[in-house]
Image 1: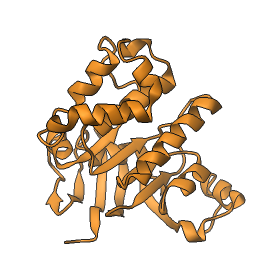
Image 2 (image 1 turned 180 degrees about the horizontal axis):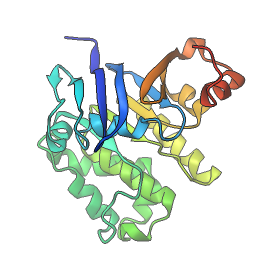
Image 3 (image 1 turned 90 degrees about the vertical axis):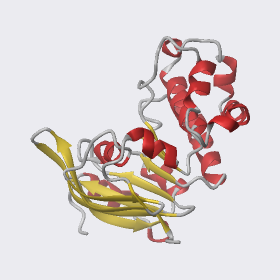
Length: 241
C-alpha cells in the first residue's frame, strides 16, 4: 500500500478560457496534515474544487488511496472518503441545523454511523447543539462555518479539506474554530487546510505548500519553518525560493 493517500500530478484547471492551475503537483501522506497558503486569487480554492470534482481539470492526474479520481463525480469522491468543506455560505439556508447534519451522512459508509457521528459533531461544536433547531440562514458566519465542517465530518472523511475555515471571523470565533480543527487533527483524520494565517497552519500541519500563480512554488517542512519576515516576503513576491 502506498504511503501517499492523495497524489496530485501536473494538474491544470481553470474557468472557461481562463487558466488558473499550471502543472500543480503535491501529495498528502496517510495520517498527515498539510497546509496551503499564498496570495489571494492564485489558485488555492481552485485546487480544492478540482480535487473534489467540482471543477474538471484540463490535464494532470489525481489519485486518492490508489483510485484515479481525475474525472470522477463529486458524489463518488465523497463516497471514497475525500470530503471538501467549503466556506460556510454553501448551505441550504431553509434547513434546520440538525436536519442539515443528518442528511449529510448520505454515503454508504456514513449512513450507519450518523447518530454516533452527530453526537461527536455536537460535542466538537456545542454552538451547533444549542442551535440544532434553527435554520442555517439564521446562524452567524462563524456558526455557518462550524456547520459546514460538521457536515463534512458527517460524511466520515478519510481525508478532510478545509477552505479558509477562519476567514472573516472575529478573534473569539476564530480561536474557537481553530481549537476544534486542532481536535479534529488529533483524531488522526488527514487534513488539507487552506489558510492565510501561516502561524496557525504551522501549529496544525506537518508541511506547507506555497501556491503562487497557480503553481506549487515552495514546499516547507514545519521543522524548517520560515520566520515572519520570510513569510511576508513570500506573500509579496520578494522571497528567494
